Length: 577
Ligand SMILES: Cc1cc2nc3c(=O)[nH]c(=O)nc-3n(C[C@H](O)[C@H](O)[C@H](O)COP(=O)(O)O)c2cc1C
Ligand code: SF4
Image 1 (cartoon, helix red, strand yellow):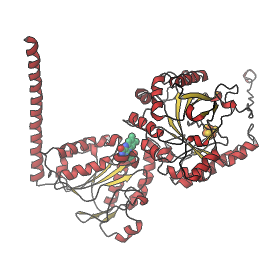
Image 2 (cartoon, helix red, strand yellow):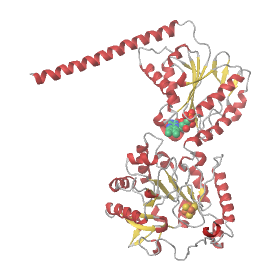
Image 3 (cartoon, helix red, strand yellow):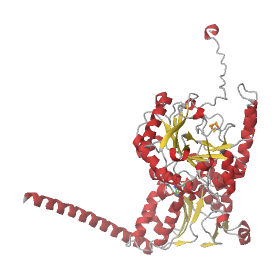
Image 4 (cartoon, helix red, strand yellow):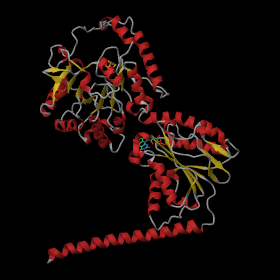
């Protein structure tokens, strides 16, 4: 008896707790509702001063709101410019006019300074007791700031705010504006008419490229004319796009640094993308035009090559080769795949018979999907498990692991050469062979390039020491263990001892009658691209020279080349002191 009655008493207590909690909640809501009603329907003094609110994390929307504020003010329109975190959302009930500039962040969420307001709106709009007339005296417009690269979450917050305001009875005076930081179209063609009231001049749609038909043409805008009292926000656009580069630069350095560096004159397949790379230096442009990127890159590259003339150990014929670069590493800094015109850039390079090696950090699966064939597509696989990836990459996205896995899935669909790029850091990611093997199964890459981390010194952001740098023998042991785990699907194919680097290749594609075909036939690749027909990585594979095959005595060095050793003339300290 006791054993059955005790749980039932506990159950009743639990039920009582739930009931009283919901009763308290209900009463609280009811009071809130009454307050709303009272404020909404009886408040004789609505707030006549328009508000300009910004929801911003890294300052883009804040800067835009500031410019808008200045512009309005210079046209005699006095607004209160307010950070959303300093605004009490319940006061919206009193507002007559509200403009909002809001960015969208991770998972389609509002930036932290606007989270409370966004929640309040969502809760109130969904609470039938608050009523659909709560904001009935409020007119509003929302300007979203986001990036189309986030797919269906593009400007989710701006759209959501607009929906919530409408659900609460506010009148939207302009369609929600979806600005795209990657296109710089921002608030183009937006006009706001002030005649003591708001109305809309011209259609304001989602922004986008003209190719997509977003926005009006400049000529059409001119036709509308700017009458007194009309606030033409178009000139914000120019300032906004330059601001964009600063803001974007500040956080992840996307587009501005999603620019290529032309690889050196040799035909090296791999490209190390850290800042110590002496040859593959990256260049930055304010301009995102792909043609200009290619032209400038070639120009700077050849200039640099010319400066090498006369440097001890640099051969004349290699210099000449370098003057007509044949390979381009789209990597080094930032995330080239995020560059909006990446496909045009790739086309331009291929058109000039320059092959393309693109490295991505596996956070933008949809960008991998839309990418045209490149000569070789790498994804950085910095760790094999969610926890370790978080520790090593310190990703910005909350759903970084899902993005990572989806990127590997997207890679699997690619027909051209695909590579997992593993950088081994002793004590961080050198175990987990099983977990790495699971990842192989997702993306089925053609190759796995395994390399020991290069020590670049310790700093506030990097606590690595020489202890974390694996020896070539460590890289070999790891590679062999991974190949073994794959049960014959992959084998260790090549190594480059000096670079502490080993290559695993897919046996069924690249080992034909016992001979490895891990090299690239570049001419064939360009012919295949030019043909316009589908092709696969096997179609431009070329035989691996014996000296590059795993275990060769040359250790990956071309015996025709000789290493130049710089003579060092150290002064004898005993003489000087
Ligand atoms: C981690 C991260 C997540 C983002 N998520 C989205 C998103 O889901 N949708 C979107 O449209 N833009 C997204 N963006 C782009 C931002 O909205 C964009 O960087 C904007 O300029 C930020 O404006 P703010 O500085 O005013 O906050 C994201 C940016 C980052 C860095
Ligand atoms: S491919 Fe990149 S890292 Fe390799 S040699 Fe050329 S520039 Fe240097």
